[in-house]
Image (cartoon, rainbow, N blue to C red):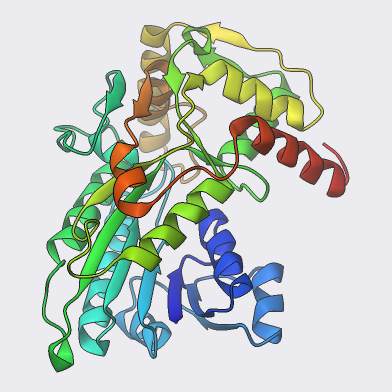
Length: 342
């Protein structure tokens, strides 16, 4: 099977590309940049790479030539930057992926979404996929991911050239972390080194995060099972470890894995939201492109519970986290040592 992976130089996209190549699939990739690990796979002949932007329909179509399935991982993430860029990459980019699938007869599309599409700033505890999309979004990222997810799921069952039928599904991995992380882990560690590691309400809220191998495993399960008449067709699934723990335990575990002594300060939720709103205002008025040190969205994510019922993913995808959180932290610590220490 030839699979196109978008966003292949990102954390999840690269890990998925490597996993597909290891099991003998030929992988086509699309990304705006390069990565040494991806370059190596290209030299070995196991990956065909197209450098391009999701907002460019011709680049997406070139990348999808010959693919039988698409894992659409690429996205504009974060909480800073121009709102139009989030819509361009996440919404228009996803439409370009679906258009390419229709035009080229690619019969399977697995979309990497986020649980943030249902998170409206309040505690989310043990919910399943029947939960509705949030009525309000604190930032453009979850808003545009929700729009894109809707488009992907709505495309399920569409007729393709030659009479085939398009099958789609969406995965919502939560707080992906582990070796190779370019987002969550590095931010936590940077603040720990600077002595600025603060958690809302002491990090007491329960969360269920996702180790990178578990996230990749979920994508492989979806790619293997997805079909027009499959139970997972046209549906979205929460993905996590299945081990709810406090935000504090997760954060201090990641910090300790980098050889640092965790020192955490506590910030009340109300104050965190107020500071986030102030930073957003200042950065907006100053047209500062980099992300603020705190936003309302981040404050809500750190100050509320968010863990999910994984029954549907286990039943329809055959998903089960292949690596426990404890083992994931051990592997993270080993990778830090292998890379030269913290």
